[in-house]
Length: 186
Image (cartoon, rainbow, N blue to C red; front, side):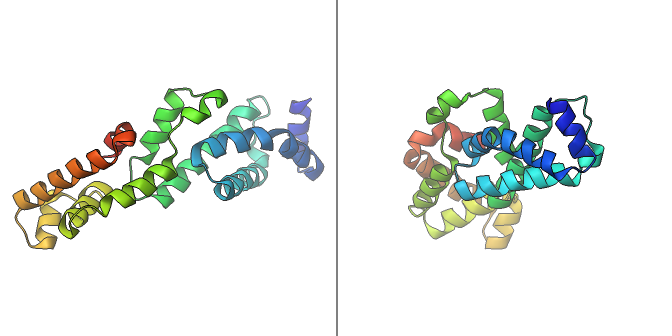
């Protein structure tokens, strides 16, 4: 039945597209929300997933799994959102780690709320000196080299490393409950 509907979507039948949307949107919504923890962002990604499906309908392989196709589109849009939202290039590693752990919907309560982590991280960074915060941000969040940061701040490399080490020590202490996520990123 789904294969027939998918073939109709491929031919451009909008009513069949609506049927697919109604069948798949609740499952995709749950998947996306489990990763982004935001209703607004989830809605945007869900909508963009189906816009992508409609836009590329002519190239759909009706012999392949629609579920895999939709979840792959959503997954890549989630990665794109996190890359946009966060300066961390390691965000995709977090998503991949979550996928590798193969967390089911029953264990959603055990997942780390990434937005909460970012909020706590920003609060914890307030406990750093201005130089420590600047060095940490430039090196760990924006991926600049120690040499570049030292030159930019007009200090030697060892001083930059010392600021970084002290900042990390302080943040680890402040983010004990998120230590595994903190270590993954920093």
